[in-house]
Image 1 (cartoon, rainbow, N blue to C red):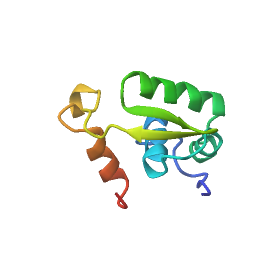
Image 2 (cartoon, rainbow, N blue to C red; image 1 turned 90 degrees about the vertical axis):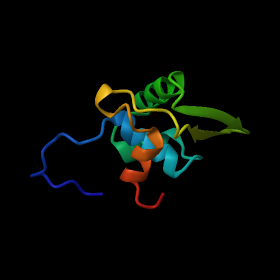
Image 3 (cartoon, one colour; image 1 turned 60 degrees about the vertical axis):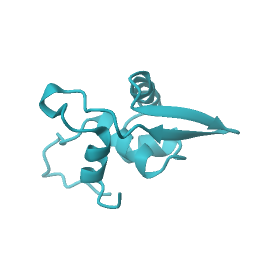
Image 4 (cartoon, rainbow, N blue to C red; image 1 turned 180 degrees about the vertical axis):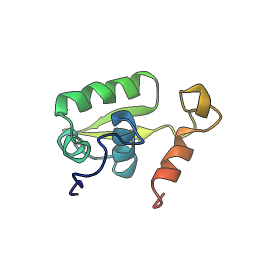
Length: 98
């Protein structure tokens, strides 16, 4: 996806949100593919995946040499402003395919 050079550098979602969308769309996605989609390093993706796992938003399960991700859509969003909404609601809002 080409980015318009006139577009401001900020986005509405953080890298955590972008990574969450990637794993929700494709539970078998590879770290390299996430890094390319989000535009960050593989190391940064691994760190963020660890943070998401630590708070229970995702669970990782090894299947042979691959990792499969599961998202807990029932968890509330973490910031007080949106705490009355769930991770699943955010994913449905951000991804019309869900």
